[in-house]
Amino acid sequence: MIRRKRLDSGIITAMIVIPIALIIVVVLSRMLYYMPYGTLSLKQCYSVAYGGYNNKGNLIITLNEEFVREKISEFVNEYESKVIKRDIDKAGYDALVASISVESSKSDNLTNGQKIDLNFSCDEELAKELGVKITGRRDQITVAGLQSGIFLTLDDLFKGISVTFSGISPDIVMEIKNNSIDPYIKEMKFEPTESKDTYSEGDVVRIRAIYNEDEALARYYSIDTPSEECIKEYVVTGVDSYVSDASDISEDILEEAIHAGKMAFSKDSANEYGVRVFTEAGLTPVYDSNKNETFSWVSPSESTAYFKTARTNREGETGVDHNILDIVYICTLTQANGVSTKTFCAVRFKDYIKSADGSIKCDLTDPHIISASHIAERVRTTIVDSAEGDYEVVKLR
Image (cartoon, rainbow, N blue to C red; front, side, top):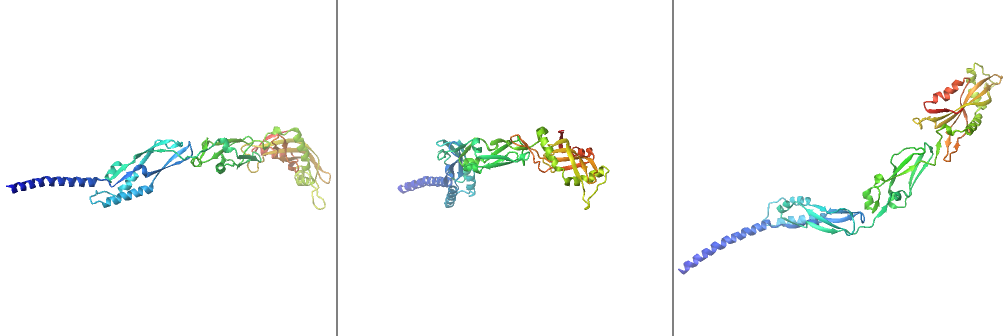
């Protein structure tokens, strides 16, 4: 009877213990199945640095690749070592890392000592599926190590810049020289906002200082004006100009030219035009024993004068001078046998220049007759009528 009772007691104990043991095994199995393979601290996935300078610093956050590679390797090894493990795609670890992002409470215009809050996030659902415990979701950093900046104004940029103009208006050329002693300004480009080959007296030239704002920041420079607005104006002044107004040719200047123009009436010029003029007048030229012309000029005197300036739309074109002074003389053309005829001759001077001091000058040393005829109207046609398409013509006398 006693033995029967012991048997019943053992059966009852086994009936209690076995289910409990099975429950424990199941619970442990589930715990092992869902136990994470590792922990990933999000804030350790990134490194923090600063660019720029104090009061103008910027936050630079970059992925800590070495740390991430180590953690992925740990996760994979831990996964492979488990007897009881989930059916997961190991490539999911890379996807998890790719899902990590960070937001900062402030990222630019930073000052040493400033506090910045960082909030990290990732695909939490994916992390659970991969058996990864996520930590380090928040961090706070203190800005430090920013150097003092170099502050420059627009005037500072142009302090060592030389802009010079040379030549004669409207054919002035400009030269820009960067003589700055500052190493960064020395590397900048200074260029006109609107490039031209030549300039005229009174032109306003806008010169721009070209720089890259990110590069300036990286080199600790703070410039008070954006590059596209870093412009200084220069006026073309204090240069010589080609005379463009007939009123600048005074009576004294004209008389000087009339006197110099008489040097064009040489023996050679008489022989150059003599046959043509005599033929127009219906006269027969005579020749010396060597069959050379025997023409000469007698008493040239000024008749009229015209000052011509290039029209705006023709200025600078090939064959168009800036200005021309044509003086018409009346004189007698004679030859060896005493036969003579009245002749109209045009002598030309060109390129009258108005100096910066207001004085007028022109090279009068080599005058030439450019037209001669027995008929006055033919000379006028040559120097006036045929020129009106290219020039503004003003009769001085």
